[in-house]
Length: 414
Image 1 (cartoon, helix red, strand yellow):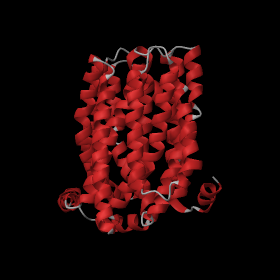
Image 2: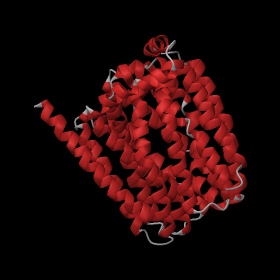
Image 3: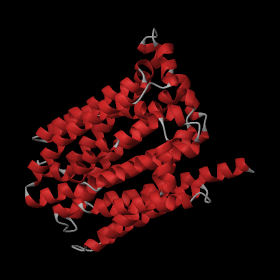
Image 4: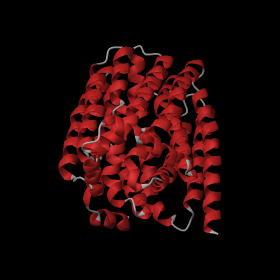
């Protein structure tokens, strides 16, 4: 723990600004997210319609992602992060707060698609400075996950409110709070950060170049991705992980409350157990894992994901201990998997073309995720256990990809 805090104290520049500003996004997100699907259900949105919203949202994101790298290069990492943050989170939060039916949620999903620009610009804003040091990037990702985990400790507030009042007015209030907090985060990060050296270079290089010419330049970058087995493996892992994350975050609350008999107000308390486990890993376990190969830890995390989903599927009705067991195992999996997944992707990307490659990564991932979003909705409508069975199949595929990556790296080392 002392080592982690010393690292944060000595950290400078955009990476530190990103970490310090992150709770202003993480706290409101974690307050409303556990109740998002339940809120939609209370507003008359069916499981299939939730799947349609997810699929259409991902389709919009795929279209927007094509332009994420171009916009980031042309207008700079710093300004793009500010504007895209306001569009992708502040505006949808207001739409969600006043939503009345399926069409409101569909409109919010469309506007939220600008998150694909935010993701590219925000990552470039700090990775441009520290991306050359793989170990440092992993530590920064660890701290970003710590910020996310600490934000979860505010979730019981929403649980207590839901227990006392109706779900709909409480979640409306949480979305309005999210609008205020996420807007503040976007503005503060803009003033705490500075444009990167690579960002300034790309602004100068693209200043007088029309958008269509920049877009045409994607052909070379596209070929660069598909010629790199390392980038393809990272792309495959991230695409599969995105599908499983979408299934878990969207359908867990519905399955737990409507099929396993968990009170709606209790949904907010499971993230606390998850957060406590992840903090234990991040502060006390992560630093002791340095002697193990990163790919082996990655695979260990995926195995725990499979175990967690298996526990959820066999959980008896009304038994909170089994759901707590699922939460515990899933938290251990996240703590092992996500920091290494983030570092794997960051280290696989050519820093000179980070913005455009990251955009194409996102396009490819969303092309894979979109049909699975609708499929998950259909499966959930038929039987709420089926999306989690789908997760187990996808996690098994992730093990195969991670194992292939480990063998390639071992062959290179010898």
